[in-house]
Length: 257
Image (cartoon, rainbow, N blue to C red; front, side, top):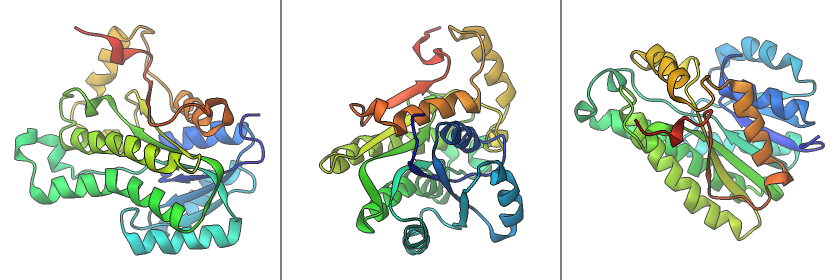
């Protein structure tokens, strides 16, 4: 098993349809002990039920993944209760609904800042806080989630495309910084999937249809398939890979018209 004996923190799990859950399933099946963060104390019972199939897992509420003091508090508790960890999966992103329903040019300053703060800065903060708290074991791997809209114009993705572009640039800079200590940082660019977050994107269903028509494999990717790519990046099998954006989209990104 690729992750036997390793402790992996997965940030941002929401429900069984989320990419974070697909990653958790793959990592667990490959031997990982799982730790989760989630939003909202009111969701505690739902999350505990959700992760109950991952024996021995723990979950911690984190109500602000881009808030320095909140992340420090939760990470400190995670380390105290679990010791050092071997990997972090950052599955945190958000944009205001109105900024996904209008042309990008109408993005408000608040909306722009919010999307970049939650979707991009939170990963920088995650890496920094984990480093400062000496939370990561030797050869640890950090993985975040991005999307093709970071490099190409995707209808109704708007400010999230800009936020994901910043996230991908952050991956490269963090890879250089943490590489000095033998740690790796990568991103998985997943194809479109029917997640709760995707529901906020106008006409999202039409995107899935285009993928089936145009992607070389003529089908949409699943959360579990994305999870397998993340598991690979978390494992020693990918020990020479860092600073990269790995596409898990059935090849759609290579296509032109």
